[in-house]
Length: 405
Ligand SMILES: Cc1cc2nc3c(=O)[nH]c(=O)nc-3n(C[C@H](O)[C@H](O)[C@H](O)COP(=O)(O)O)c2cc1C
Ligand SMILES: [Fe+2]
Ligand SMILES: [Fe+2]
Image (cartoon, rainbow, N blue to C red; front, side):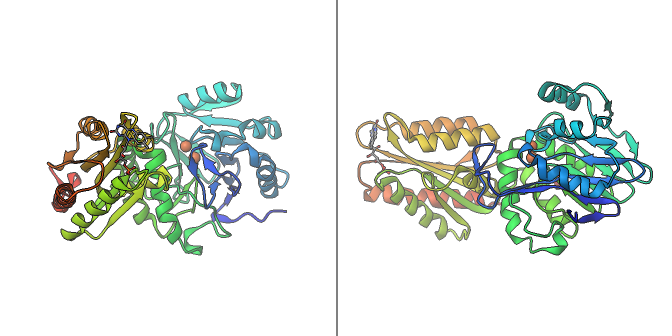
């Protein structure tokens, strides 16, 4: 029944949209959904590249069978084992009992561990080539982008790179699949949010992968989430390159928690100080209102970060604490940092922010601000100064490591 969309000669899109899941990895909101992309290559031998979340098993198998007619899948190539892509492996094996599962050593260990399958498998090595007839598939291992087994599959014949999660974006595919057929504007921020929250910690591994991949003359990128990239490849690679080098744009993110508005007023004042210096990108996030995945996205996007917190039971405000842990986990590098806080009887939040500063080893403004009870003139001025100091440091251009030595 299905008319699958053709991506390149003999390559068909058989992925699905998930418009129901509210949180990716049970944590990251999906207001625009997410797609799980899978691709079928029809040649003398037939290969399926990755599968989809098992909740879509029925529709997935129908899409595949619409394309196969009465033929069978010969190879299932697994670029990534996270269950949003590996979830239907067992189902595929039930429908196609002779199908050979293709993966690297780490992948195949996981196939057995997750799904109990250890027969009809083919272990491939880095850069090995598998011929389907006309199509020649070359495997490129990209460990830790973002799991240890992750690899990409390059179809040398039609110059298509099946990239796994890399270059993917949140957001459903609303009719069209390929970027040339749609307005892609809505995907850029969702690509950044995907990168920052899912891949963000592994910047060094992404850099390694990019160095390995860029010599390949690919003309199409088929990732496992979001649009297939044809005419935006340069921009997509640039986003990955820039984010994995933790090279933020000129701008400052202010994140604060506040119960009764004192710390919030400090945040407003700090922002005014930043604007005085001429920075135009100032993003203020109330940590209790905006989901942390958007805040983390913006922290990856901009060089400056200023955090404010009231003291709460002799600790940081818990929502701020939780955000700081998320930043720490992702190992965000090269930020310009500033901090401020408030208390009523014995301050603790500013000390905790100082400890965070020591952990992250970022360049930090000389001034920090701590107010007792209502915001008064001295600390009002100090907040303006904090904003100015961070803004000035953000304005000093960072030396681009790529163009050094
Ligand atoms: C639940 C709760 C716990 C608090 N714990 C402390 C505390 O341990 N030490 C302290 O000095 N102030 C404490 N405070 C007072 C706040 O830190 C202080 O009023 C702060 O300025 C509030 O900032 P805000 O208006 O931005 O919420 C607490 C306030 C609340 C509501
Ligand atoms: Fe993944
Ligand atoms: Fe994924």
